[in-house]
Image (tube, rainbow, N blue to C red; front, top):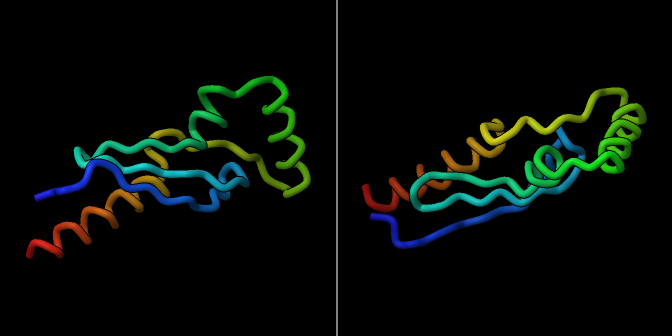
Length: 87
């Protein structure tokens, strides 16, 4: 059914106030580059920058992690189009 390996898109993520790339693999696993940058690889300097940006915006900036609604929405969109193609 699926004849591709990975598809990706770049979106604006309001949780991190940054553009992030979301990847969806044919096995329905996902990866968000923003997660690596804003959660796993969060340095003290980057944390300070996020805190400062958040204060300026009037809200706390925080990556929602691997099960983020934006990531899941893109994954669902990809597979609904894929399923419609074969229906």
